Image (cartoon, rainbow, N blue to C red; front, side, top):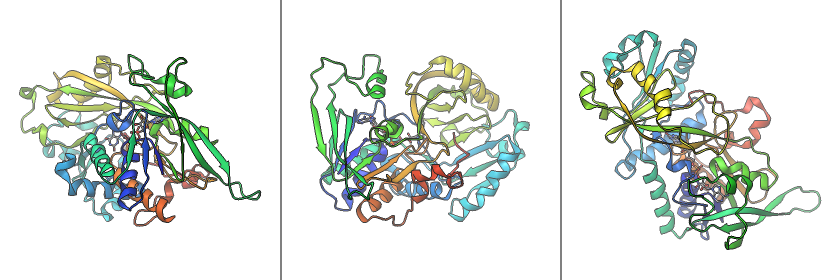
Length: 421
Ligand SMILES: Cc1cc2nc3c(=O)[nH]c(=O)nc-3n(C[C@H](O)[C@H](O)[C@H](O)COP(=O)(O)OP(=O)(O)OC[C@H]3O[C@@H](n4cnc5c(N)ncnc54)[C@H](O)[C@@H]3O)c2cc1C
């Protein structure tokens, strides 16, 4: 069984399959250190407060798992505070609260006038707010620890991880006779990537990944792996694999930037205990949370064009997007400074939900990718559900059929998420 992509999703699936007693599992990845994996470049937010039942359920099961092993995963149940400035959006969020609270999330509504009293950090531009919600069971997690744990447990059960193996081609064959259009993946061609290649000196990987080429003249090993079952877990890179088997993918890679912010402790307004806070999502779209001695902040630039872009804009990102929004909402951030930042890829689908299931037209091909900003907080649930589907042919306690890619043929079946940051 071949899992293509050893990010948090592929690794969780590998572990879940191994737990069910499946043997002969191999995970291949271009770079298991995760230089280009969203799993190593994200914000560590973990919430179940979404608007679509399948997303709530996947996150809820994953958060329950994180909570049960909180020390292992650095899970801190500090909640998400969501500030709203738009009346219509706030009204819709209140409607969705019924679904969330039916599922035990205990989401509270905070009147605009009570936000400062409850969260003393929020002390500016209060008149712009129309209200807020606070979801106390959400929180923060250490995503690197999560992926490392899935991997260690998978390896303990015999899963083999092949690092620096780049999927270069897919061999398919027809099965099922003339009447059937069913195909199967017969083998996957891998190129063994030497250290430092094809990631060039400044870390650019575009040529190799986008055009699927390695430079001529390099002496790199090539392997062909025969496959009984293949699972595409390539995150934002998944469309490249899909194209190789003739499936048109709707996923787009979109750059997202984060930065660490230095906050002077002496600048904190009265009553502010920064380290006790969870994630705060501002009405402006800015999100931030305490991260060690700093604050981790992100903002998704609305004009960002799709592409495999890992370049971080540097202090300019902080000056233009982060600091003005922080200081607009909280006097404690008036004098804060830029520490460092980075960029990673969101795998964005038209309805901003992931894609999971069996790939139509193939006898032995599955996929689980494109979890936009949700892959870590859904990783456990996706692993469990996909392992059930692959081994028994059907979903068990978690039904991911709403995330089947066939939904994009019918807008009525889209799994549209709006509180997407
Ligand atoms: C800035 C940012 C903030 C985020 N914040 C959060 C958050 O707070 N909470 C949350 O839950 N999620 C968050 N996310 C999203 C989350 O990180 C992703 O959804 C998740 O990591 C996706 O995991 P994955 O395993 O599907 O993909 P990835 O982690 O991207 O793994 C894909 C793997 O495929 C490998 N690969 C690519 N091409 C090939 C090839 N041809 N051959 C072999 N290997 C290949 C790559 O090396 C990579 O390791 C954030 C993402 C970003 C970028």
